[in-house]
Length: 264
Image (cartoon, rainbow, N blue to C red; front, side):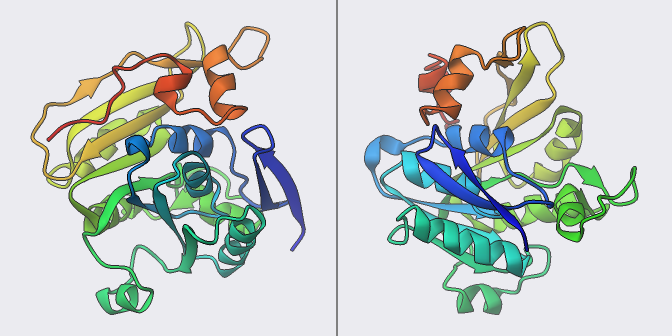
């Protein structure tokens, strides 16, 4: 498999990715930047459907207390994720496991050293398109990363709830038009949902949404003021530059201290 060696966080991370499959980019980095640091205290993170591990590795680089598990079903991507862990010297806090989140059993999870209901933070960047909608990507790995079965989003939300501890936090990045379906799938699993729109340019509708929730919370839904990613000339805004090049958390990069995690 042909791969590229790509710099993330201004060269602070170097990530191997398949040249012709799905390629991680801005969405994965923004997802990682939304994870709170917890002031350096130890916490556990599960990156579900991690691909080559970009989001989880970004979390581990920024958050010194994070112990991260990258869970991915495609063997080739798991192998690349393990290479990426080693080449970024994060073996002591990051591991990669092979499992299909839609069908992995409790026994299989135990065999992988994972326990249900044990993660402080669960994150995901699920496929954005339903199977059969539009033209499938010609490369098998790219097609699998972009499309999921009709009930797939519910499977992802169920798995995230299955793995989060009581009071644990969930973060998903997805297309904005998936928000109603996400809310439906998360109902009864995570509460206190907070949606953060990501606008490519000022004045445009948000193309992406970051959705945060807490297992067991009864707090009401909240829609935050959105973040703008690009200037008119396509350069990153200062906030986006701080995330993408300096590896800062969203609240620091955009100076929005009100973006704190939801409370139960």
